Image (cartoon, rainbow, N blue to C red; front, side, top):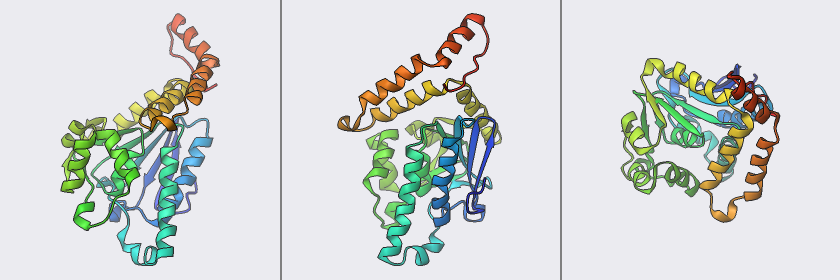
Length: 264
């Protein structure tokens, strides 16, 4: 897939869409063109019925994403107008990740720092290697961090851990991240890709409509009550019961075989 930049790689393997941050010489720091590429990649995966799960990862084995590419700030964030253009691109990219209807997984190896943690928090699940390190060093740089990003962190780890992460700005280990609930699983570095691929494969083999409905309800649970569209959630459940996949699931159970779900 043409992503518009060699710094982003997108490929499809079976039911898994892989989006890879590919700037290893800068620990996969995200540049403006990478932000711009993310919505394009996500739209292609969303539109492809063969893609059941989307996995984000970083190239090079040293980092998932180490934050924003500071080297281009003078050019890309040097004036108020330029800052707005840059920030808008980041907002659109994050929205594309947050509003994905398909399950998303961050496969994290090495450093996951600043904007990298922000990206990881937009995904549904986070699986990391045991050598991973996490931080949001905003307090060490004197920059402000907008409410939506902090809210996502609080939703995942709770208020107290979110404060610890921001107040200290320090690096946390993979075990710290596991205790906080920041990651779902920690695995040995040599097993990370195979474990993630197998885990994504389990999800891809399940009924897509059921997974979608569950994702919608889980996401709604952490929204303000007045922003929850309960009718839409109920409709998604109704679609499951009216689907061919529901019939297939019942048949497969009775016939003691693996179901073949089609997403309809």
